[in-house]
Amino acid sequence: MNVPKYNPDILMVGEKLSQQIQDVLKDPGKSEFHLMAKTAQMMLSSSATNDFYEKLGAEALGFKHLDAKLGPDGVRDSDNQFLEVKPRKDAVSAATLGVINDDSAMKLKKDHTGCQWLSVLRLSKDGSKVLWALAAPFHYWEPARFAQIVNRLGLDTDPTWKWGTNFPSTTEEQTQCLDDLEKRHKKNTYVRSNDLNMKVVETIPKEQVSFWVHPSVQKDSLHAQLKRFV
Image 1 (cartoon, rainbow, N blue to C red):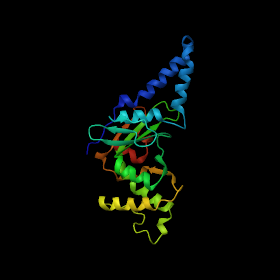
Image 2 (cartoon, rainbow, N blue to C red):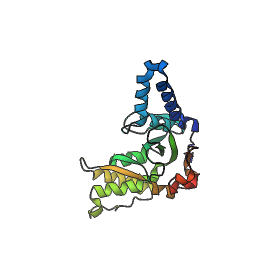
Image 3 (cartoon, helix red, strand yellow):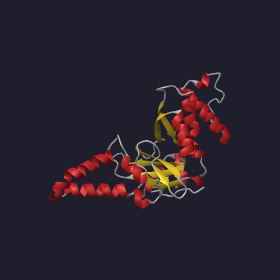
Image 4 (cartoon, rainbow, N blue to C red):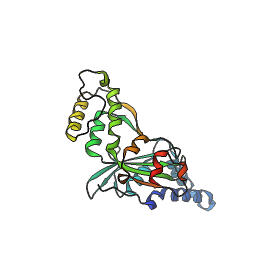
């Protein structure tokens, strides 16, 4: 397994940009650039979008950024593997890694076959810096996503549904199960915010995880599941 490694210089680009913004805004001689600087500041601190950090999260792992709104956020040309990037402004110790919005059988099946890696960036609440970053194989979150989708569709109590709520362990059965789940999809029925729970991290072998933490972040402030990587 070719586990991607983070490039700290790229992860810290946002921090450098934030400082440049402040320098411009404090300089009366650069008033003609103040609007541009304020716009960039709004982009960094926005609670609605983290597009800038999706780009950094992909490039910091050596992936080429893909800017399409739907689909993966990056691709590694050397082996054609794909990456989902989840930047999130939150407390450094928050227990969630992010969410899959409007999750469904189709989205899970697409990720299962076409997105190999997940990259999570924990951002300061003002968006000025990356506090820590974690990359791991995306498939480790499939069982929890699968169970939530099955429950949302009401299949957990359906006697005609043979797979239950536990995602199969073999490749052949996983393929069959996801095909069957897709057939059971109901129009406009989604898991609105399927949580990428921190608890999954403890099930992942350490050698399959790439982790970086900002030098200013104390180990004791990290979530318990992350401390083993420091």
